[in-house]
Length: 342
Image 1: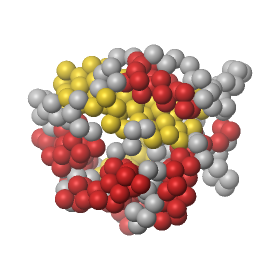
Image 2: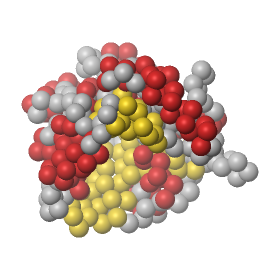
Image 3: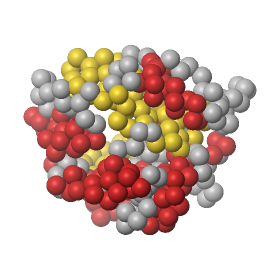
């Protein structure tokens, strides 16, 4: 899936770092959403069934504050059944509780599943399966990420082949057109929030880059112009199979709870999908009357050629159904988990 000799070049540090924030992008204007505050994760360690230590990112508390917080958590721990109540009381986005020998047991299980000769993505899937096996035994997590039915490595490989054929490229580009993510004191100007360029050959991802690797160092302020420049530049490493270009506000809505957000963003000019594979057209409801997102289909249908809509109806999500996975369901579960929705 990811070649061991894959090339990483033209990596913009900020855009690369922000890829890890895609499921939970920063709120508008740098402020927390109404009624919500930052919820750092919390890790607790048990001995003899009792909470004896904790880890949490943030300012280092005084010894007295640390002991007081540890005592509060210990008083609320009554076994795995108390995970959710404890997490909410601690105002933690994620709570991880390790049993007495949990770290060692988890390490041994992961070590037994991950082989040095495997490509990095196969290693990742092996580690996830090891963690899934140990969850509820050596450690406990809330919210539980293992309710998401991730496919195995082989199914994932076949899905990637459907998503991105050989000798083709994929471009993702998210731009902050108003400069709202600028650091305090910095000028507010358009800046790239996140980007990713992938090229696949011989069944594996062989080239990884960002917008900088395609020669775009500063956004123009015109999303369509940027999309055209990036698409033309990406053709040098592989003809684009999917190009997804969005403003940051549009991306927030796409990963939010509103259905049909991507189709609406395209109709409003806040997102560009070019080229758009038939499977994506059908599965995201970008074609009229596909039956998968009727509101979005009606909104965008008049912008689409009849031949494209017809192809979308024929393709649907059949290729993924044959693999026993539903990418839209996986996406929905992942975004709800990232938002902390119980």
